[in-house]
Image 1 (tube, rainbow, N blue to C red):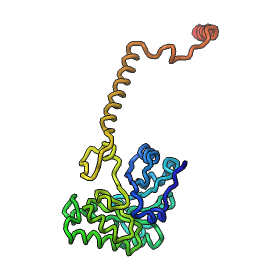
Image 2 (cartoon, one colour):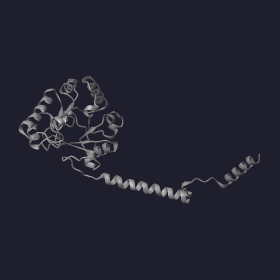
Image 3 (cartoon, rainbow, N blue to C red):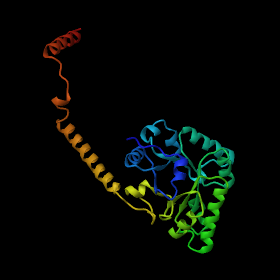
Image 4 (cartoon, rainbow, N blue to C red):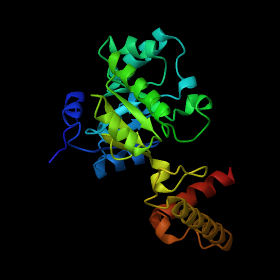
Length: 270
């Protein structure tokens, strides 16, 4: 049975009833795996969502394209044009960590926007770097105030990142927003991880909130060793005369070859 792609209305109706799963994917193989595995939502690059193959590969995935803030359009109108382009290409919602004014401009056009609270990588210098946010009452209240502001301007949801689970749970009781938890605990409405952390291909810092479910890095090393071994065998066979052999070749009938040789001999005698 084909799985139905959720709508924003479906997701909102399921708040408190169902834990969605979300994965940041970086390749078509990862996107196909997410579809096959039953991942509900995928964070994807704008380039992927614009590719006609996207819905062929992932017909039931709720797609959320996003850009790193300072790689995104700078002006509100530019951001709005980008959001229109994404929605026209088949996105289900837009991730945007830009200003509230920018988000409000999008929501005024009924574009579902997911904002960002808690540890926001682009702004983390203001909160002390890459560390948890909301560990004090005052800090937790700041997270909530940001959530409330997103709600006021019409956002669909927020990513709540590296916030104590108790804080996430309490905030969830006081907002209608869809809370995408990345290191924010089970109080969110969705659990979000990056595929590189899940698959063990992250060569940099692995965040505390991530969990590795496979070690593809070792598999890639093994596959590369097999490639090298196969290429070396090819070189050895070519140099030793073992390749190509009869099974890899197509032979002409001997009668045709005799005729061809006679033709060539005639050419040579001229």
